[in-house]
Length: 491
Ligand code: AMP
Ligand code: MG
Image 1 (cartoon, helix red, strand yellow):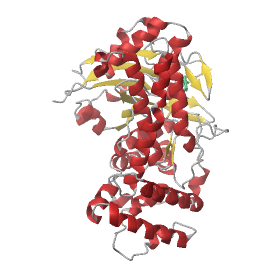
Image 2 (cartoon, protein in one colour):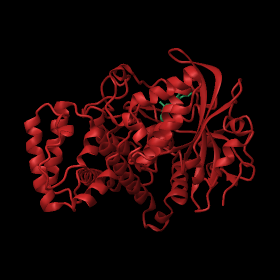
Image 3 (cartoon, protein in one colour):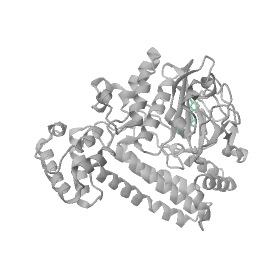
Image 4 (cartoon, helix red, strand yellow):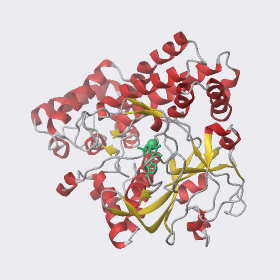
């Protein structure tokens, strides 16, 4: 069953909540003509939308807020949040508007949100707009994460304009249609806790349970169970980020999803040269959100959420829930790292191999994605010295010793070569969104109105475990010029 845009069954459950939860506000269309820059047929199919929707004559107007979708109920959601450790009492969707939700044939709800859609009551000093550069980055990265199998919001389409938007320089405005089962954030709870609106807190928790954690309705203590579930999902998400080498860049509590999704793509970065202290956000001078800080920041953020839920949960229960985080995280992370080197069980010997490898990679600034991908080609019984891997290290004899120990362990604890190789190629991506890849797509779009690179990257990143020989250069470490790219919160 596939729908056209005219007969979408659209509703907005969030809009049935009390008015304190949001502000009804319509998107502000661009002053200039809106142009569809990219349509993601893959995400559309998740909404049961046929791919030919992209040829609908009004598609650009619809996804830039000029022509309302029948049944939509646009609103900006209220939230607060801890930004870089400090509580900010009111944030909210300052440049995003929730249009409503579609329920697909499997009964899954997908909210559609327009990002970059103009001023809302929560815009504070902002202009309500998003620039093409940052919209392309979010568009590509959210789909890259989806392709990697990591929980994330998705992106349906990207609409551009020639409207001028002022950042460090003049740029053009764009709108992204973001998809998620829910955009509720940790900060959505925090705002009602700090305002002491505890009845709203309970209403929000009931809403989240009813729509997104329905199994918890029958628990003796549903709110504590909700906190437990959010902790488990967040720990799982953080393990996925660490294993793939993803740094979010702005893990403020307003950017943390109650569904454990990767949310709000700003100055993110995928690890290239392995460096645990990697800071992808040039505005993050203290390194609060450095790569290796992320797991503990996940817990810090969950502690803010737990505190906000204390009117609903006994303090001891909230503490007990938080204590489960570390085990959820390490169980998931160790298991993923073991799988990345071809073992099912993260036993001590396997974790020692992982630790020694990471240590060598750090000393040699080895490319994280390329190295793990290459390990899948090692055979247990061969004498091959693997120069293509060995050359990625400075201390080559040390790598030789690692390879020897690795093969010994493969003999005792791993599946046969071919089977193991297949599993490793399915967990170690060949492609991640390197900063310079996005940069090429952005420059082509900005300077030449050429969106073909965007399209090529979408195809590769949506299937990052496939070989794509024509794009193999993107599996290599970045060229020298990539070192000068800086990403900050400005978007
Ligand atoms: P972010 O750093 O993008 O997660 O945004 C933090 C807060 O600032 C959120 O409430 C955003 O809605 C708001 N915000 C960011 N950029 C803008 C903008 N250009 N106009 C209005 N609000 C913005
Ligand atoms: Mg945000």
